[in-house]
Amino acid sequence: MRAAVLTGPGAVEVAGDWPEPECGPDDVVVAVRAVGVCGSDLAVVDGKRAVPSLPWALGHEAIGDIIRVGGNVPAGRLGERVAVEPNFPCLHCAACTSGRTAVCPDRRILGINEPGALRERVTVPARFAWTAPVGLADEDLVCVEPLAVALAALTRAGLAAGERCLVVGAGAQGLLVCLAAQALGARPFVVDPHEGRLATAAELGAAAMPAGPDVSMDFPVVFETSGVPVALETAVERCAPDGRIVLIGQSAVPARLSTFTVVQRRITLRGCLIYDHPADFAAAVARAAELRPGRILRGRFPLERAGDAFAQARKLPGKTWITLEEPSR
Image: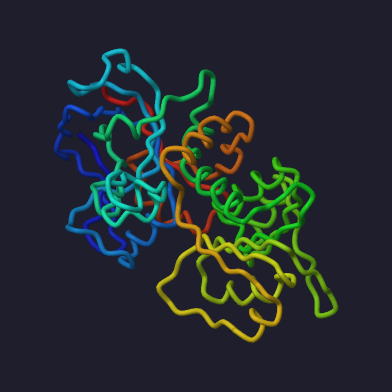
């Protein structure tokens, strides 16, 4: 079968002979319809995030149709259209049993430490294949996984209706935070050096942060979604006294931080790693029709142009996705 694979830093190829997936008793095989491109994928492609071996199947934000079920899975699930929850916690360790599955030390992650989903067929544990709501468009379904990240971040931030918040970074994750914040009744502002991303955020109802040396605007809640080290300085600078900064973007490069400012303003910094299974992902599936996260999609590429999709993802505003027009069954 066909699969988009990494053969070296920056080198993405479409293999035509990738091995067929096996199906364990608690698994399902999904014929993939589409896969969203995420910043984590770009880090893998760039060689900034090591993978176990090469060539390596990419991608994790997958949707598709169940075409095979394991012996312990109800046969009635055959034919279901699903969104894949691509993080598989062990469900047995202390973190998992306390509900903190995001920090499971044995978490398996499609496309990171487990071969990815950007291929015609992929096997996933049945409990991590979420049935799509009736009538939900593929465009919205493919954005469910990053929407789960955004919704979890809002919960952890304690954002309330009527509050202003600043979203640092208007990439795909930042746009989803804006959509979720608006639905909550909060007012999101965004800052990003990319004019196209700012324009996309404005189309979705967010406001650009006023600029200029005389502008004084502090925010009770700041979401840092870019992962760019210098962005943390902006987040701290714009955070109001007793405000909260939620860090979603990640970077291995150290960021400068004035502890004087943090202490004097009594700022709370909180890291937000993905979401916890199953409640956070279930919430994203349930709210996808209301929030219509597919509105952030812009660049669409077929599987044969997966290399172009990864190369263009940073340049294009909105979210990039890769489609497999006719999944093999």
